[in-house]
Image 1 (spheres, rainbow, N blue to C red):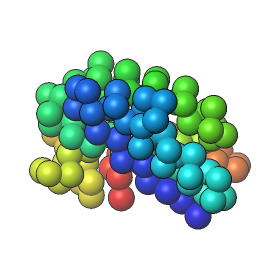
Image 2 (image 1 turned 90 degrees about the vertical axis):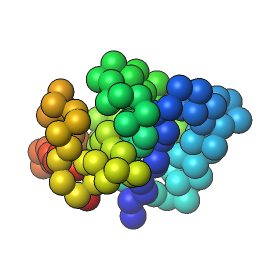
Image 3 (image 1 turned 135 degrees about the vertical axis):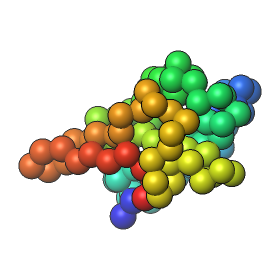
Length: 118
């Protein structure tokens, strides 16, 4: 089983989602409790954050901290910046994030890599 955790990159939205009673935190905990051991984190609404590499990295850092507490190993999680509204980085690589080189995660027997969500 695999879950895709969608996180909003917008200022205030991300912070509300990962707060103590936030839905993002709750959804990650529910997925893990239900036995879903594979997680993909899609950082959505990157267009509202002007595709900021700093914002993306900030969200990865904070998200890694809380999913680790839930039970996930952040090294086995793919983090993908997307814009669902514009379709950026969903199926084809976006040109709006030239800094994004793709995701990499540890798997049994090595590493897996990719550039888009799907």
